[in-house]
Length: 118
Image (tube, rainbow, N blue to C red; front, side):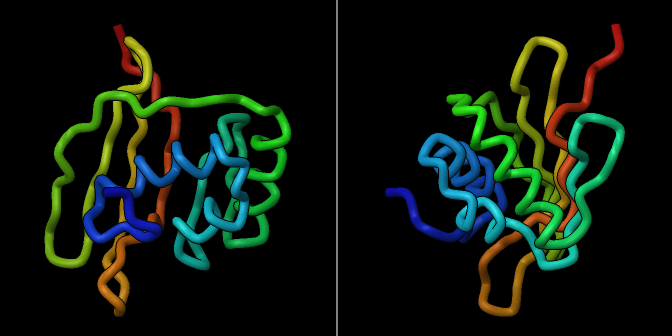
């Protein structure tokens, strides 16, 4: 059953896909720590909740439907985790998540489209 918060790191990607497809910008922003950094894919970074919100508002406005790729098992060390999903043959996502004081996980660094070299 899908929860509305990430109880383990790999749930973040599942929630991201669900919220993109629902157009839930507030829910997308809630997947990140307040001072998180998101690579926007155009050579710039969205830093902090307001810039991340602006990025997701633009993205959701495009009405793109996404699906969950093939997730690797999260690599967890205490309250930090490295998550990664293959979204295309030569494209993976790479994220750093942190366990919050209330036990849920949120991303602190998000690189949503890292190209794999040939």
